[in-house]
Image (cartoon, rainbow, N blue to C red; front, side, top):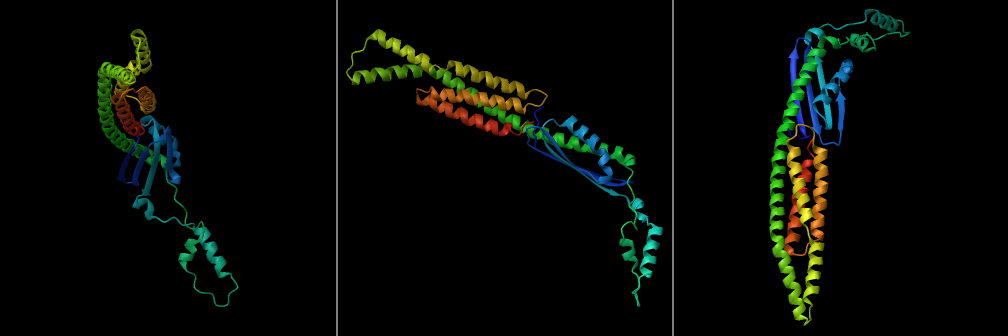
Length: 286
């Protein structure tokens, strides 16, 4: 399956322990790079989260965020350090002030440590949170594969167009060589030159060998066939496809440098356009 590196997935769940939501985004990247944002009390989940992401995604920059709110039952009781609160009240009362203002209870609660932070038991919710993560990852992977299917279809269309260009160029080669031969003979006659027939044949043979592009066309066909084969593989393929684009572009440049007719020059340009269109899309393939 061809997968894109660009996708988004989000899922939310509410239970007796509270509510949680996972949000995962992925974009293009040369390798797999993960950025995790987890609540401090749930940092213990980070190794498991990384393991699950790397098992489903092999390439791309992945941003993963967990938002967690404890349930009302958990938050209903406000844990107060009574001893510390009384110490703060006694200290305020002992201040040498003639007419002290009434002590505001909220000011006491704001004193650091008076309200005790209720720690979250990560073990009790980790199973549910990781199960929700797996579901979110499944959504993300599904979105990546849908986008990848569209990219694959586009690349296949460009491969068909490139194959047609190569076929037309190959069919036109004998006619092009005959046209070049006629052009050289016509110029020689216009210049009123006496040409040795045997020498002319030798020169034309050397020119044909120099301008022969059959090998480049064969390699272009081989690269196109390899692209089709790679696209059918069930594994990450972006880097290999990118390498094939470089090889195809090299062959297209050679075809252009050997062009002796406007048709071969135009075919080289068309191939370069198709290769660039494929290369831009391949940059987004896992």
